[in-house]
Length: 287
Length: 267
Image 1 (tube, each protein chain N blue to C red):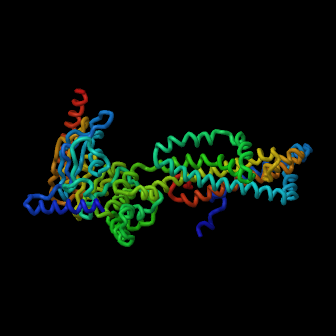
Image 2: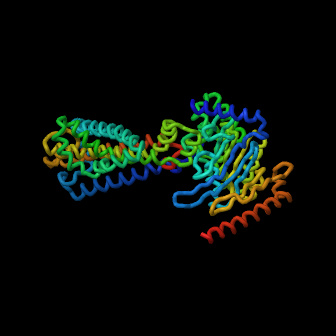
Image 3: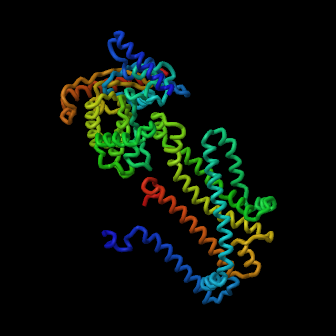
């Protein structure tokens, strides 16, 4: 109750702000000088500043240990920064969860409940929110349709292939009608063919909805193919070293994967990553 | 339809039944042959045929004894499951409670039941109650430790998912922790059911040497005193069969509940 009231007042304040002439709406996600230092002294993130606007598809790209997953977990509210702060639609974490500010996450693994069917798994977040059964089932059916699992409602996860399990996991996130979708290397464990297919489907789903996506990956190709913007990160300490808009007109399809702009972007990002690795190495040498 | 054409030998369940049965039959035949050919006296080693005859002749007495042992076994098992599960739920509420109480659960487990049974039989007046207490102590620990382990062995990714969706403690327990704990709980049941029977028999032995009792263990003691070895074997056979039946029953429950999703029950 308290939380809802709070959210309402936040939203009201925000609207007023808009009315009083603020040029843009608050970013969906905002990280301000966010740092994370673990108890053993490891600096996972160092002064990260990042604003992600509504409708963007942003990839966090970097080598392992650059803190991209940590940053994503912070965006999900699963981890807290040691310093700095985060804002969701201009408010704090407590304001997230209203129908206009719904956040969903897809993990590295499908993380499905093995004892529950695909439909039951996809319905879980709605059940936890006490969404009425009939409405929940309709939303799950729509989400499963969207990911191409409409014929697999009553199948148990272990009867599905890795790619289909991931689709079920995405359907579970989509069933909540999220405004912000966080994805932590969701297709990392899949074969290239399946990964490309899922990338294309994901891009398609994103383009047809009012959806902001933050996508963690260590694949340059995947980042370029999917994103409207790629944030390149370096390790030791984890930090942002480049912010590259992917400004490619035309459809993102198989032809795009072999087009000149695609390869040019891959080259640019690859150069940044090489730089990132060198800098990371220097840092390590200094310490 | 397809199933009907398939030869019996190719069915997966076929050899699982036939192979152990063949070994058993062969051993029984060998046993019978040795007893008959070497003319082993029945008071040393009775032949299977003699045991079967005794089982039939003494059936009334043995059945009464079996029912007594079964009653104590089931009472103790039910108590152990109820208490064990309740304690496991208390343990997972906080690490502090667990570290405070767990050593006592271990003490209960490592102290030989035969050593404390005489005390319990003196303290608890009613024989059935005393025997049930002994058997419960024996059967309790696997339930506590397995259920606790199960309730804690939750996929961290799923736990994050529940946190992300702001699940309440109760929702997390009911929808995640309990289903995750089931395979561990069933493994505990399987061990515990056998231990309840062993506990009941051991306690009956202790009580039986004191002159009270009417269960199968008491029959074994009496048969031993009277050198009625065929009856001793018959009683022993009944205990073994009870144990197998319990194990099979627990496996069947686990199989029905976990079928399809847990590795332990996949064909």
